[in-house]
Image (tube, rainbow, N blue to C red):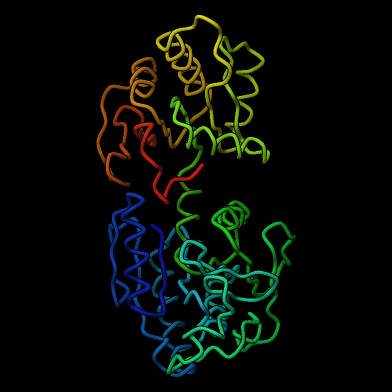
Length: 353
């Protein structure tokens, strides 16, 4: 069970919605239950509306009570523009949980909220020049993140920088990729905190090894994959006849956590059926070699060929990520989920290459 401690009710409900989107049985509660069967338990506190001293007391109690449920990990939902008693509450959680370090990633690029070079921006405007400056309880008077937190000893870091072993670290983020980089760098013994975007990225990472397969000829998908390939992303273009060297490289990349397989140059005279068959055989081989948590396929004919070749015949829909894009469990392979998308449809925000 994953536990979330939110400092207001709307934030709790928001993360509950994210849990549903990721297929988790979710419970939102204003008290810590004595027991729960939820995969995601979100505790909605109201500490943003009370004094700091009262907030500290409430967070001590909530954190201790949650500990008794032995959650897999605890996430602290903080306000995305750092209103509330953020640092004081984080210090409480660190003390009760016995952790030495907290990673706070409050920016939410998907909503236009970014931290760049230590300063907070909303849709490109310094946060203290927006309506947040006139918030009735926590007016934002500076875009400097350290000043926004009203606390000393907080460090601000970029996603590629080494983290100190102790203290509260604020992670800068200006894009969804930044959030994913932070999620990939999480280490045991670190309290994770921030807004909904970071939490969603953490759940994406939790899904395990991800294999994307693109069998579409639509330009928008091919262009996105090409861009990622040129940026050094985990993309392998499949040749007309993949040899053992190519398959070996694919296995290595996949074992690192993610691989995107796309159609490369097509041999002259090769039919669409031959191409799908070749891709299906290759993907079937990869699924035998590596335990995959998420198999994501675009292109209906490609999906059918791959699943038939892999011997996967039964699927239980879990989530409709967008119209026509469905994530399904595979009863015969515990832990495997398959998501399929027509080639002409756009991927939803919850799934990105």
